[in-house]
Structure formats: structure tokens, C-alpha cells
View 1: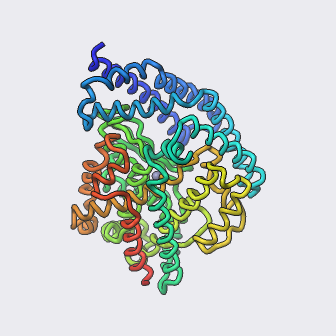
View 2: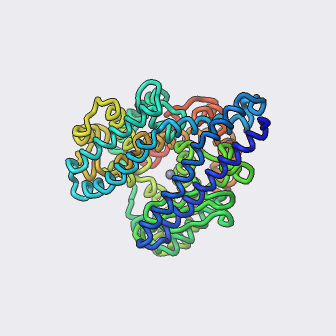
View 3: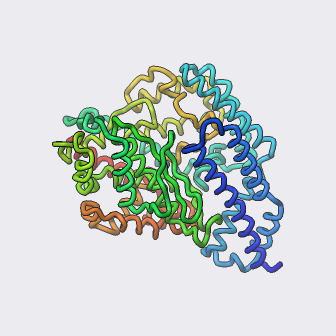
Length: 504
Ligand code: ZN
């Protein structure tokens, strides 16, 4: 077989694996939106079969043979070509996945399924002792996984790589520590500030159907296509890019609070725009048409949710519309008061309810515990104490119970160690990209004020979306912004916004 033929065969096989995953996506979307509860066991069977088939197909030794043949050939001689990127990334994933012994994968699935059930009980009773043996098992298995993958430096690198390909602790730890110190300082200023927003404005009656209509109008205005996407209701909102021409977003509505669904929809639409901006027509199912960095994905959702959706310019355009739609709740409310209310900062226990400013502190605290857990420097038994000490230091409040502390997130019970940093990376990338977009389009604020958001979407498509996996996240940040990852753009953006709102 010629090298060109081998490349085509490789792509065909990898695309088939992706087709199986996209079938899983449809089933997963259905499970979380419309499936009756009674279908859960059967759905698990369907999903299990599909992921088993996909794994088998992708780890087939034939993939390894085709890779070996293509890698030596002229097909990949231009390192910047799509072919070279495809082969490089397929090789990377193939090596990773074939390194994990089948028994370990099965044991991780078995233990994390049980651990999640036990975590639900432990959180409900705020009983860490109940969860501790499971955390011990999960940490041990994740260590085994890191050893099976192999790593440079510390074991955390191997796990981080599953979520943020190519990222290492060394690359992010200084940026994270600097960010943490600056955030603690910023929070102190906000706490002592003379002005406080009136949050009761957004905690009035907001009719759910009207919220849907307004949310869809906002999503459409920022470029989310309802010809190629849809919005549905779920319990834990998500976005799923099923395939070319089909991207689904979801939300949940709170009839007593405007923020949840509105910014939730903008967040998921941001993920959706990334999926829609990938070149799936030509490259679906191959690295060139897919994303691989949770951090990059999150940067897109956070940019539309925060840099755009929580900006004054955005509301200069949308607030009069919102006032027409939510007549009673927003009657007589001033734009500036509304803008303050949607940007309120208040330290609280729960990460998923956190505002834009405190959110990253929640993440950094988890990152600081996960690393020593893996090296063995922190024992699972000591997690609550360590958590509470740090929480007091960063947020200035005492954790009242473990359900509001180290038991609040599902991630560890599900075996997701190394996942949390991608949230903060997303916020950092988002601020750094947005600062560059503003530099490239100095009238962006005026564009937002007149309801024009598509130039920003085009900028993101051109600079980020269309590349798929051609560049790793750190390379892309350097390429687009001309600088390595830094906490400065995020801190600058927050300081400017909060000093205006809080008057410090
Ligand atoms: Zn997200």
C-alpha cells in the first residue's frame, strides 16, 4: 500500500471511531434531556457497547501499523500541514490509549461508578469519613494510571494531559500562584468597597417562557445558528457537538432568578460557537476538525458569558429589550444598577454558584490539594482540614460543614483528578484572547453597543476555531496573542470592571 493510501485508510478508520463517539453523544444528549428515568439501565448498556467498540477500533494494532508507515513517508514532510497534524495527534492518542492495561481501565470504571454513589451519600450527610476510603481507592488508581502513561516531573502531569493536552504543572503553577495572590487582594478591596450592588433586581419573578425567548434571541445575536443547533432543558447544563451541522446546547431555568439561564445560555452558546466554527464539513472526526483542550473550549464559553455578556456595552444594547420583555421586574431599573447586580461579587462555599471573581480561587484551592494527593504528601484523611484552612485564608470565611467544603464536587469520585485546572486555564485564555481581539478591533465596545457581535465571532473563528488540533493550546495562545500564558490580562480586566462598579 502506498503511503498516501495508508494515510487515507488511517483517516477512514479514525473517522469511524468518531462516528461511534457521535452516536454516544446523541444518546448522552437524549439521556440528559428527554429520556424517561426508566430507560437509564438500558441506556448504560447501549453506551457501554458503543464505547467498547470505539476503544477496540482505535487501539487496533492495524492503526499502529498504518501510523508507522505514514510517519516515515512524504505525506507528513510539511510539519505545518493538516496531514502532519492529524498523524501527530492520532499517534499521541494511540500511544496513550494502548498504554493503559485493560484491567486498570475496567477497575477504574468499576470503582468510580461505586465511588460516585457513595459520594452522593457522604455529601448528603456531610460525612467525609464515609467517602474517605473511596477517595483513597480513587487516588491510588489514578496514581496507577499516571504510572501506566508515564510522565516527566510529577505524576500530576500525566493526568492533566488527559484534559489539557500537553500542559504541565511547570507551565501553569507560577501563573496560578500569581493569580491567586492577586485575586485575594482584589477580593479584599471589593469587601471594603463603599458601594454594593443591589442584587434583588435579578431575584424577582422572571417568567420561564420569556427567559427562553430572550435567551434564544441573545444566542442568535452572538451567532449561534438555530438551523444547525438547538436549545433544550436539562439539570446540569452542557453543550455537545454531535457532528457537522448539529450542535446542541442546554440550560435550566429559575423562575426567581434571571442570571442562571441567561448567562448559562451564553456560556453554552460560546461552547457551541466553537463547535460550529470547527471545519467539520471537511475534517469531521479527525484531529483537524476536533478540539482537544478543555481549557480552550472553556475560554470560548467564558468569553461570551463574561467578557461579552457581563459587559456594560452588551447591556447598553440589550437592556431596553430586556425591559420590554420582563416588564414588571425591570420597570424603572437603571442600566447601571442592573449592570452592578449581574456582576455582584460575594465569597461563598459552592464553586458552581461562584461569581466571576471568586470562581478561580475555588479552582486554585482544588489544584493545590490534588498535586500533593498524587505524590502522597497529602493523605486523603487530611483533605478536610487542609481544605478548610486554605478556604479561610483565601475567602475569609470558615467552612461550616464538609458538604459545603471538600465534598461538594462530583469530580474526585468520578476519577477526574487533573480536570479542575482547565476551568481556570479557560478564564486565563479567554481574557488574553479578548484583550488581543480588542487590540485588533479597537471599536469592539461600540460594536457591542449597537448589537454587532459577529465580528468577534469571525475573529475567534479565524484565530482559534478553524485550527482544530493544529496547535496545542499553549502554542495557540503564543501564536494569537504573541505572548505566553499570563494572569495579567484577567487581573487587569477584573480590576477595571470591579473598581468601576464598587468604587474603589
Ligand atoms: Zn463550560
